[in-house]
Image (cartoon, rainbow, N blue to C red; front, top):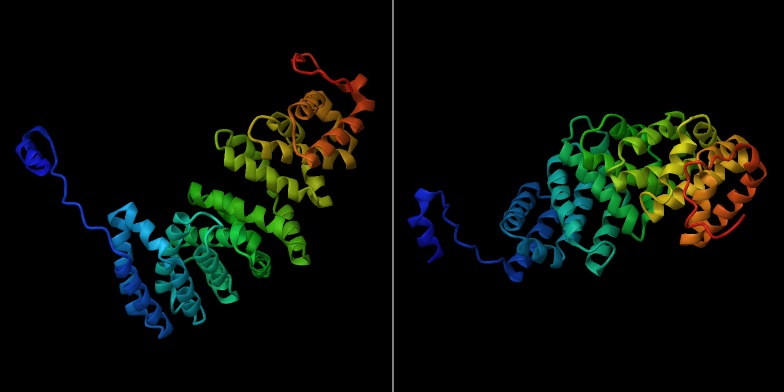
Length: 362
């Protein structure tokens, strides 16, 4: 009836609604997954790609189909297939690996992150050394498409955020000598906003997860590449991008664990004023990172304390304590206030600050 009405009103610009397709059934999905699994074991690239095209077609028809495909364990089958083909020469199997990666990226998105046995098993299977090596190949290869690089970053993010083997994945990634150049290259020469955000996430996760010597080398290489200055510029330019600012502050905090990182941050006149400005402005996590960096700098360089006082850091830190924060942030804020206290009379600037909410005296 609706379609007949659309036809009768074509002259008024009404378009005919297409006939809804019948949702794909669980049995149909299971049959294609079984065929794909068999093809992957035989390393039959042609049959595997046929199955992927079938699932892609179903997924393009409706959100309901995509949910059904993901909930029927497709990600695990695809991860196993990716691992199988990755054990061959990656260049030789690049086409099928890229198509598998493309399908897995939206399946991981459909799954609740970190939840579900199927999703967890898929991530763990994708965490093999061969699979991680193939994912990194797509990032490094000049011949790989932008979509392939983005999907590789998505897969690596999933492994670092939710896989039970994330420490091993991080170590496999950090063994790549020019990894810092690859990820920083995506930041310095942006390809897309999504790739920029994913690269920041990976750098932060790698610095957070691993404490090995390879992690120290990775951190040192990023500092030598002048990532600190780039992060400060990113925080300034991404004032409306909350997640980008938060990730940049998180990375800066990790880099300041290193003496070279602290020196680079202290040597930039933007650092302290920018950190003070971002306290209580972006998110709870951003506030924690900002307080942490100021604390780390202040312990090693009194100039950071003086600069902080001159831009209102003392009152901001008092307000952080009054409004409530995590125990670690509370300790760092309190310690920073104590370090600043001897310099207050000479250097503190209070003219533009509002003290109505300040009830506690230091």
